[in-house]
View 1 (tube, one colour):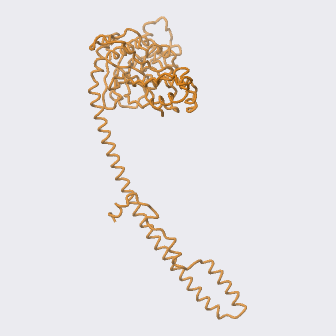
View 2 (tube, rainbow, N blue to C red):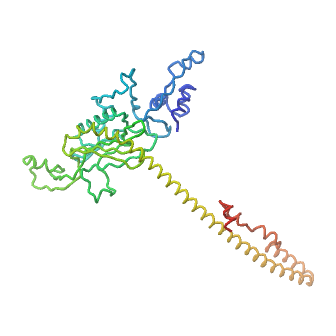
View 3 (tube, one colour):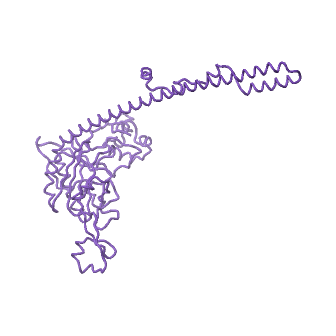
Length: 430
């Protein structure tokens, strides 16, 4: 993992070719990394001028804006096709209290999104578009409503820009907390918390409005509802279309079923990425009404930042409490396990010592027998005595040593069986 500051030091301390070799990438790829992290690079001819003392001063590392990539993982996911656009810095400010005017232009996130959404994977008739590309704005729509949903998203992003936000697809240098959006217009309470699979498309990373001190995930989705479908001519069509065209669909055999499909009305969903439990949603009751709500929605999202920060701080505090409780529980468990293993090792050592003594006692009984046998052999006559002595020598080799010290050396103490993790506590408990 390489930070912006580390990359800046690298590209201004050695030629780009050496930096590329260090990470085993091409120079064009490394240039894209620098652009992604907004790290300035030495101009062409810089190193030749530096060798003769005529190089210009190094360009400073600009401050990171909210939503900028702060790190790059050389073994991570591929880079986006183009880095996020940084806001233009005005040459002069006419008034300190002047507010930015909402742009009527298509937002940069939406500019090329339409073609990508239309390049969609196979789907059911009238269902959600499911583009293959995953780094797209967090938008779900059918083909019939795609232009309208993209327009609503573009206007909302521009309105958020007037509130001081920078709307981007979230950078990939961290994990983002996001809330699952239910695209259904009227979720069934019995199924609300079930593990149902969403029919809508979801991107690789959320679309986030980065304010100066908070980041809020934004989703624009065409809502769905249970729609009656009729099977005619080998495929399903909506019942409304079937009833509107009785002459077109003259099939003697057909049947109806239901499916969760987009219905044309739009929901906007916002949730915190800072942790904590905050989310809000706005949805239209009839088609064409949400456009007028967008300025108010942007203001409400901006106005929720104090609540978001308060809840995020409380969530961090609760997480810290849970972490400490978990660590305390782990410590209690480790101490209990340590005491159990100490007791177990003490018992094993004591049993082993008893076994050593028992084996030595048995060995001494054998030694006593061999001594008695040796005395009896001394009374035997030659050549039988020599043969018996050789057999006795072989028997002694078989039974081994009778030295008590040799037996004792094979015994292991409790600490040799298990080394206590908390030795001081084991002494006090014993």
